[in-house]
Image 1 (cartoon, one colour):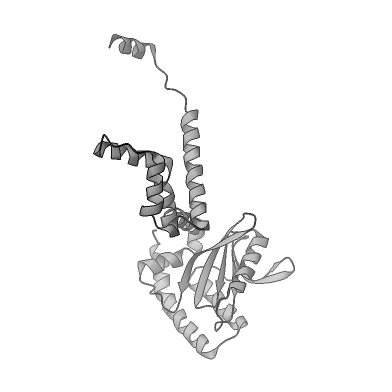
Image 2: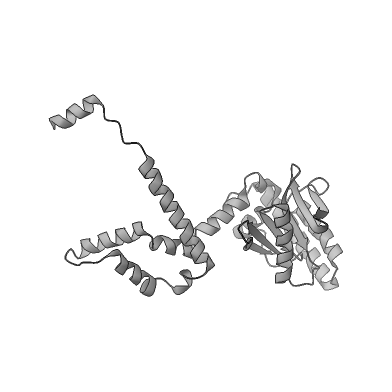
Amino acid sequence: MAVPQKVMDRFTKEVKRFQDILKNAKDRDVNEADTVVIITDMLASIFGYDKYAEITREFAIRGTYCDLAVKENGAVKYLIEVKAIGLDLKESYVKQAVDYGANKGVKYVILTNGMLWNVYGIKYDRPIQTELVFSLDFLTLNPRSNDAQEALYLLCKEAISRAAIETYHERQKTINRFTISALVLSGPTIDVIRREIKRIAPGVKVDNLEIENILKNEVLKREVLDGDAAKEAGTRVKKALSKAAKSKEASPAPIVTASELTTREAV
């Protein structure tokens, strides 16, 4: 991911300054309201938002309020639920942040105590699901490292128009052990394995089911085959393969001209 130079310069200058501010605030055990003030300044100084036009405090959602909303051209991009800097980010707080996001129809919400920033993606299934996309620990990150810069950039104003966080999230959901395992167990891959076995030992008979059982029971780890993540990866792979097969079936047969037909007959 290419991070613009001006953004990297901003990180280098501002992150260290806010690391000192956060350490001081933690030592003083500041309350939630004061933590919100720090977060608002971080959004402006580190992430590049106009805190007067693009950041809304006490954002109203169906009779309640989320601490902060980040907007682009008037549309809400992220909701941010802030807790006091001394508090741990409990699971109940995650649910609170996600509920706010779901009620507003946004894709991503942030739960933070200033030091730790947890970014969650909301999946609008029935029931609504959520997953941790990434975390930032501001007290330990090095603003000059590539990994830290790329993670910080995902939340920047400059990244919104590029849909950077959506691209990152999609890659994260696709390039992982569950998807790779699902692909290994797919019909086309097993066909390739069976074909290669025949090349190695032409006289040996083996069928796809036997290969699949060996992969499941002796090659792949159980943790990549069981659970919600594995099921979701398997579903994505099956849908993609089905779509590819339908597309292939729907492709029109190549048109053969009279001259090509004559040439073929002559051969």
